[in-house]
Length: 177
Image 1 (cartoon, rainbow, N blue to C red):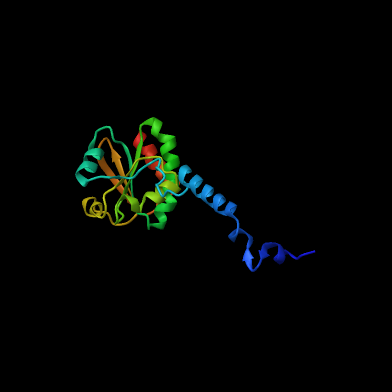
Image 2 (cartoon, rainbow, N blue to C red):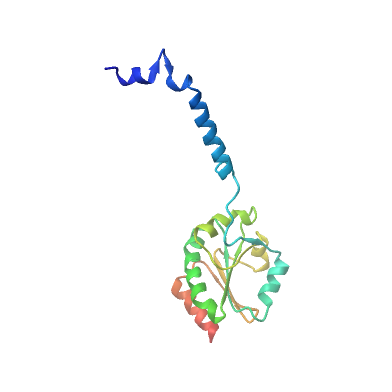
């Protein structure tokens, strides 16, 4: 009985080097991959794209008398931001029906694409805007993350540093009064 090596090798050549069937199989697989898009590098659409915004437009958004809520100033490199965002998602789901708005403003360098992977990974459901570093000067920020508290279109306060879920919920409760 021949060993496995003698079965696979004949005349020191692999069996598929001599078979036209091998070429047909390879071509069929390649064509199938191309037709089904497996060979494409098209990006998957994101459910919540980060939007670029000017400071003027962002200021107008906040100054709307209908805006009452929180602005989370974040960055993709900020470890406390990564901890705070999931709590903000839960608070958004809980308080959005009661009129509280939560948005995020990214100060990342490199455009909206710098923070998009984090927003996708954490399933952030509220609007996220990108302005870059200019927001630091415009809003006199002293740390990241910072929560900007807005009541009826006016900045009511700033909370620098990571906030606990409980502290953020208390702030929202105060906004509802």
